Image (cartoon, rainbow, N blue to C red; front, side, top):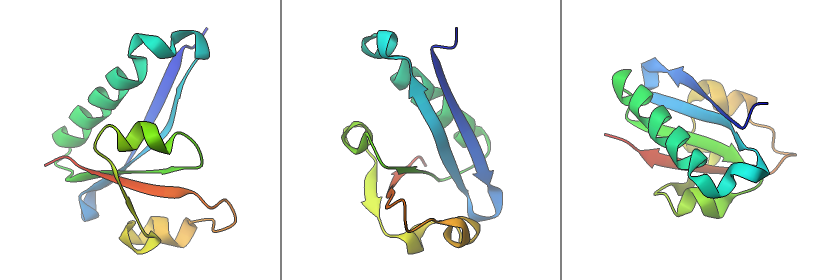
Length: 99
């Protein structure tokens, strides 16, 4: 059984990375699994010399805000991600500076 997952999509040329698909099985949410994944992705991003992580979310905004992310507008996304942004989903965009 998979109990947690996360992905990092890097945009090296813009020194940015997208943290995507962070999910933790409900039975394991009080065991800091999300925190551990966030720390792991942040370390990976630093190793790639990225300066910020961004997320798009329609849920759990408060969790990311509590961990230092802050809300931004679509124009703060990487150029490639701006072109793919789906306005119908109304995703919140949050950024974490990691430098």
